[in-house]
Length: 428
Image (cartoon, rainbow, N blue to C red; front, side, top):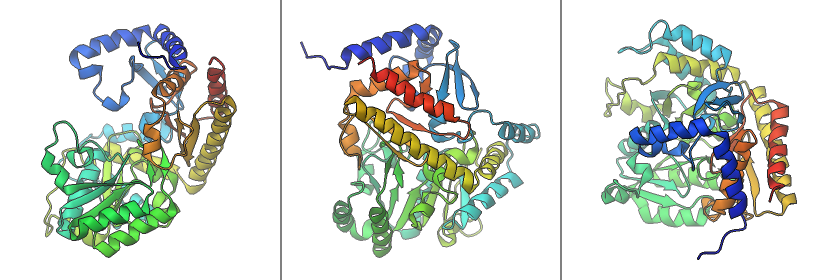
């Protein structure tokens, strides 16, 4: 019989409590499993034994079918930076929707959203919209290949750029041949990147990188590392693509403004739709010209690309995110990570908190977190214990410990998360 982890029994206790608090969600999860594989339509939202079924979002809080009210520290994986059902976003989206939700011709809403993004991001001359971040990275990679006439795109260990074949490789259902045009680089490792980029040579079309690994554990890139990637891609005649789908919240001009790095292409999503489905990509005019229907070589469509409701909700959201608002969110995030880290350190557990601006992550390991390899060695039972235990105490984070702040979250709610973690660790 395998030996039990020291966290096995505490995990059982918080699991039993979670089941007791969520009977209606369990019933719906059983129904869902009949018609949805695993009971979900988004693999990323699933966790054992089942996620709560939500019925409402109000500012910083969410309510499930069992009446449990939790502070939302995930905000639909960072997309709801103003919180749930922000009155200005709802009012403007409702006004637009009442006049039509989609058309087979442009609306001024998509033009204005593009103007807002171009005004904010120095590296972006022109933008195209998609319906998701997955589509945005897929389009940017295709555009880079077309512009350079080269086949290979490099991405990083621990990165997440959506679910299309070029970013999910290798994986079930993905032809092995895809691996011939995708290479993986070590994050925050300049010598390791130099070696692989040198091996790829003049077949390299682009390097795509998140300035802060999101799904990989909220791990910020080193300045020297990003500076190296900018110079290395320039020297190689390849494009640098910054995936700012999550990190666009960190600065008015995105994380690239904070780092002082100018990419050739940038991908967007999450907050630019104000809680509605959207994605986008943009960059240098000469690169984006390949999409011009009058003379470009790439045809790129999408029935709901730039739909007016998402575009207007995005405009409202970005208008609300003036630099002082973003700065305050980042300060609050930094302070929260410090306080959570002190609680974990005082507990003596092999766990730590990391963050970048208004993004944070709890990790069940005491290793230094500079790449996703350390994250992969985290204790799975302690990770699950922290997640379910905080759920039971009224705080909703990703199963892997990721969270983010919204402007709707109050100081008392941030204090409450610190207190909830301290209380949870007290039962060990």
